[in-house]
Image (tube, rainbow, N blue to C red; front, side, top):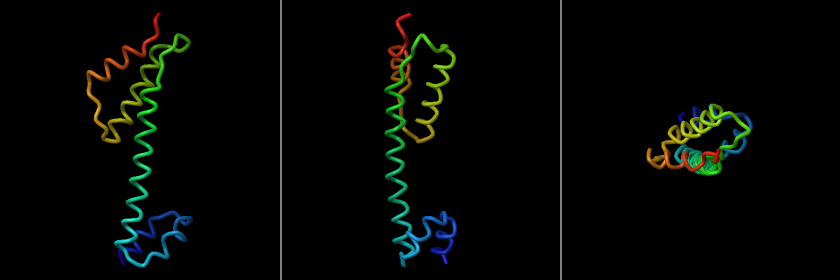
Length: 98
């Protein structure tokens, strides 16, 4: 019964992939493993956005700070820990010379 609940929540495209798994425990582990791999990739993507952000004179300071805040929101949403003083040091270093 649990396996049917899980399979019914999946997209129809994934139904063919996972319907052949007979054990509910195996199905759950497989889906969980897939999710963890995607989560690690997403965390790496967010970290790259954080470290590659550059402040430039061509954009307004407000829009660049908002972009930085969105990245910080993503970091906190993924439960990644980022020291507050590190955040401040990073944003100061990213400021344009002007």
